[in-house]
Amino acid sequence: MIRIVGQFLEDEKIIELYWVRDQRAITCSQQKYGAYCHKIAQNVLHNESDCEECMNDTWFRAWNSMPTERPGILQAFLGAITRNLSLDRYRKNHSKKRGEGEISYIYEEMELAEMINRFLAGMKTENRRIFVRRYWYFDSIAEIAKRFSVSESKVKSSLMRSRESLRKCLAQEGIEV
Image: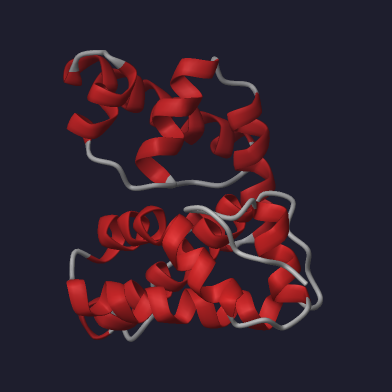
């Protein structure tokens, strides 16, 4: 039996709670990673009620996923669920304005995702971190500058150069953006 002691359980114990179908897993996940997941949803949606729905859906999806999937890093697992749910909600909310849901995001195609992963692997660490904070976590320019102790203009120029490099990389693969 897993006993909850202290402020937060270790991730392995939270995952074990999911696997033994103990509903305390959800409470522990909310306590430990709720703020993190909420920030991801808020960066995408900018709407508190939509964020709350995504948060509830995150815990539900984690509950349904765990018996078949044992995540290596619980924080990343929950963050990815939140991010995907938030993007789905964003598309749903904006589909009427943009051609009935025909929004084409570059990372939705598996082949493109693989190309982007190769592109990211070839980047300098600082530029990759800036790029990921902006386009994965949807952090603002100011948040990124503060996080890495650099100027906002450095963040903007890094992102501009990275986007241009990505555009060229994709063009070489026959993909025009």
